[in-house]
Image 1 (cartoon, rainbow, N blue to C red):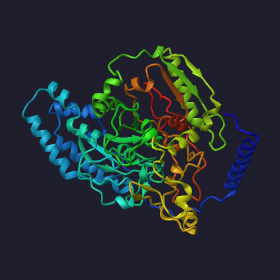
Image 2 (spheres, one colour):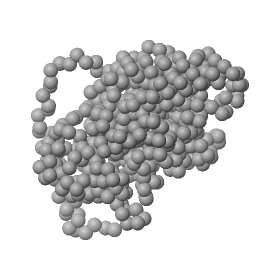
Image 3 (spheres, rainbow, N blue to C red):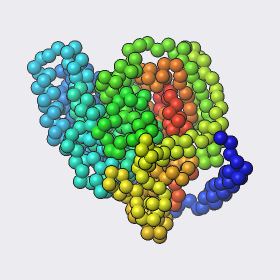
Image 4 (tube, rainbow, N blue to C red):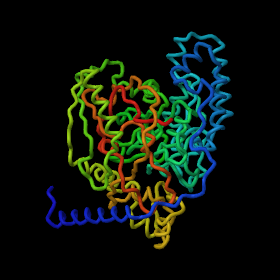
Length: 512
């Protein structure tokens, strides 16, 4: 429906106001540098060769009795104890249980069943994994960063966790996430903040940021994540690892908090996060269970028959910062590779109304369910007046510090995280939350064969923002006065559910 003249005038006024705000923010002096720190900027590199093997290769070595499962688990436990104090990614461990399960694996292997039998029944036998804390893992906390859930302990396993265990995987513990899994940073009042292993002063993304960090630091090789607006893909982007948001309905979402309701069920997906791309496909098969039949992963894909589209920018939103040249150059190289080496025809498109993608996603997140109720029943007014945002009978708490807290406290509001406020407010239509960094470091990792599902069989989209460029990862900003007025181009596709890049895609930069 066309806008009225009054609505057009209001939109113009808001655009002019936002430009004025950005201009004023640009005039603010940079924060004063604190005293020099002796703390390391990055975690030390892994020294054990076992930590640098894909899950598929680890499973092969274990089945061939070339390495003991206890040795593998001990290597990962040692690594976690070495670097987790720096990154704060694993928030609760189960090392004793994991070692006991490793001994059981070694006992099973010593009894001598054939390798083919073991591979079919236990494709991830003895492989150490980690699980996002929002998922139920028996005996582990399940708070999703909410203070009022700090005493909640899972009494069962989420469906995907159970399937991974049945496939032979050994959970080492649970990893940090953003409060209520609804912010692009992984920080909360229960566990604190998670740091990027390549640069401890940078964020890890959210909401599955603990998984992204623990995988990048070689503290795990496979992780469980969830994604409703980039919560797998942004941590993969920031930490230089690989993540996949599957097609809706392929992997069950049961056993995580919070879960989706109404229209949101078509957006929330559970998926794998891996240090190596070659592990995405076998882990996805396990997580999907019977649902994997929907993907036709065994059918060969002809790239020449797939429609590839390439778009550089979002169409001109004033709330979105320009895409960095390094990312555009990386995207250009992907297009050149597709066309010259693989014979694919890539069509360049400009979708100007894509600039409204975040508003569309935000409207979906604040829409009513089939019973006409907002889920969760939050609005900005309720949060600012102190009535709070309640989800499952639990209040949401905000991080301490900064002018935002002072402004909220001034109107008598309860403790609420500003990320959740803006994410759930029906009236809030933000643009962004990203900023750029320094020159791009060296690449790490090789792509695997895992593009069949992303292509959807007949389409793929290349957009500036896929990959994992550490230099474009924002620094920690503990006292930011306003939500960041930058947006990651990646979000254009994330929020509109467009298909992701298929085939051999590698991170744009994964740290040094």
